[in-house]
Image (cartoon, rainbow, N blue to C red):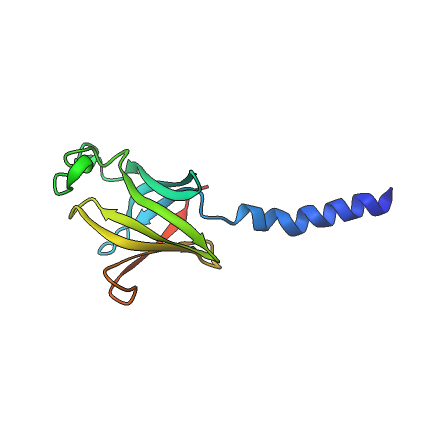
Length: 142
């Protein structure tokens, strides 16, 4: 009986952290220019693909901002509640082949995300291939 308890304990200790380390959950985005918290984005899975939705905006003056530069169905939608990461697919340690929307410009970019060893989320939006783009590092909200 002791061996079974020890084995179960070891499995929990080994697999517990691995299960907890995924991209899903609530993330704090950081402003590229000021280095301050900009918004909260929830990363979730739907129909086998990964999405990200704006849950909160930190600047009280921008709480009611809409995506007036967006096109199509996103045009003039409130940024809070807007799905900005779309249809990413798991590929090894990263999620890619999807898009990310910049609500300030209304532009859609190719995107990939990857969980870093330090627990931050690397979010890269790019045009064409990943060398031409911008990277942000988001912090998990516990």
